[in-house]
Length: 264
Image 1 (cartoon, rainbow, N blue to C red):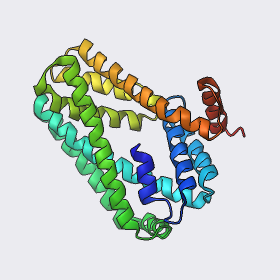
Image 2: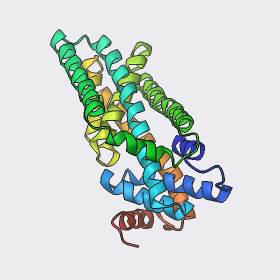
Image 3: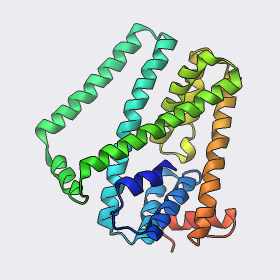
């Protein structure tokens, strides 16, 4: 539900009417459901198609909005996940050479960014051109980032409550929350439907490292999967029906696959 809020607050023109905003909301709910049945590379064209149908926006506008939202999202997730990984490490007490490796990777990433800024500034000009699409762009970006922070923290809260439910250990809630955010980020960058392998393997491995039994870690992953699928279905299926994509779960999934593969 945070994503439609982000779009309505940060990317849609202020002149957009209620009907357009509702269609955009439904399109985002549909693509949230589609992430469970489609590979990542097919989810983006499907999102563009549904958003264009709902709001009659140009491809240029949607490309800028989706690209900008993607950059802001990844930055917020990456920074929050890095902080949570550090919190997890405080509980795990990794050996010194892992700290050294992490610091080296961070310095290399910073060096790459500095070199890119010094050698090739073309992408900065492209960013400036993209920002001209919106009025008050930096305010919109700040608002989007603020909503995303709340969104990411909600993942941590959910995992903390699941850890408490499964283990009954209040002291494990904080580290469980941090691990949940790190694992979710791993699932996002894996590019697979539902973050398969990336989320599950990261979550179970990190929970095991901080002393939670493997069977409990597996239960935590399965409970979170069930909650994700339930909420995505509860929002996405009615939204797909309102957009005329089908009247049953099977027909909706089939239609989403067809649209993602370019079949109109």
